[in-house]
Length: 261
Length: 320
Image (cartoon, rainbow over all chains, first blue to last red; front, side, top):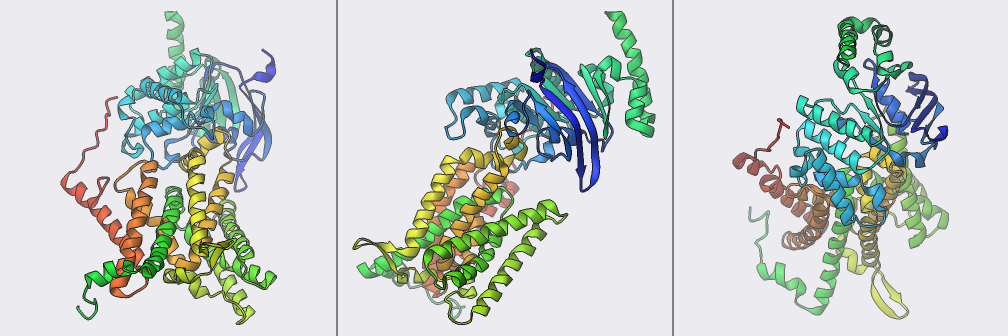
């Protein structure tokens, strides 16, 4: 495959909100097929980074290429899972309606939703174990269920690159396991998944690669090379007191993992 | 109380308006106008309310005044077409200013809205007063209108065949355009209203859809206001969908509800106005208010009494 078909290429990306800089000169080249976590403290610009990649937040400088393309048309191969708070859950739609929205790109804008699209939407609901709730208004779901609806919608988009903003936020342990299983399954199919994550305790176990971010790109690479005390310290700055332990622990775990293999 | 409310003469209120052919033709035009205004506003309003822009109708309906004035000054006549273009242009400009203030300054949406439309309206009043008495634009008429005068408006002829009065025809055309727009662009409207980030990832231009919707809203308001007044327009943008939302939780059902509701509002308002001898537009809003009250009390979806007596336990499966 030629290099131009990288799922995501970010060059010298700079973003600011109301003249306050949020991201400086981010450079990334992400290879196809992997589960990649974006990790950093609050206010590090994690969400801003994926929103800028999606063109929702304008960049002040630099560029983004998705599968070698820039701009509006490039988003068609991307499935974006926003933070749960970003939509109005009182909106008059059912669970199935929301998942069907993921099919709009395939169905054609002026055509009616086909039977095939409906079948796919139902299958996606099945995968996240939400079939029973297909006809329910989305506001009458628990937080974890709402998150799963978003996931089902992303699945229905049948994208090649997924960007997810804290899909594990406010989700119980069982749902979290179900979601991570699903993400691994997508990775097996050669999809690229980039996930904003805030829980350091399981990051090592979940991701193949880690992007460490704190306004600047601190490090990007395989999890065993990036998820160490030094780099985490650098990412979290003085605030790492709590995390030193986790970093230590993960260093130990690494040892155990190697032994067991 | 009897002095305040005249006795209800059943036959005079309900039967007399339809007794002779002439009365029938006259009153059917009034009720028809009411139905079409409520329907077109109700349909477009369902999306406006769902997008949390309920007061955008308020803003645009006041914002069109300077457009009318400028169209009058430049053409020196109140011909239909320039007035229409002027009003739509001013309405769109008004919604553009609101968006700009909201996005590019720290101002919140409601503040931006209040600032913009009062400025536009004031500008319009100023322009009209400057023009003196040689104008037929009356800011008061813009606010209240009089639906009872619908049958008095000039008729439109195709060749020599009379096809109906102008306001009735234009609102009929607008209603058709709205039904067509919503059927054709249903998916775009839904997805941009619900989740802007998904719209972007589907390659949709949120801005284009927003201003398209604002244009249709402006056209609806322009076609309605001169005969029914701005207040009725604003009420009809908000009442049908909010009332329906106490019974239905999906957009298609809420949209369909606009049909029976607008028929009920118009007949109800017409009879109420005939009984009390008062403004028809005002009575329609009162009827809409009563309907809303009933829905709010008895609605199957979060109606106050329903919740009280049959507290529906929403089953949330936290286990999985």
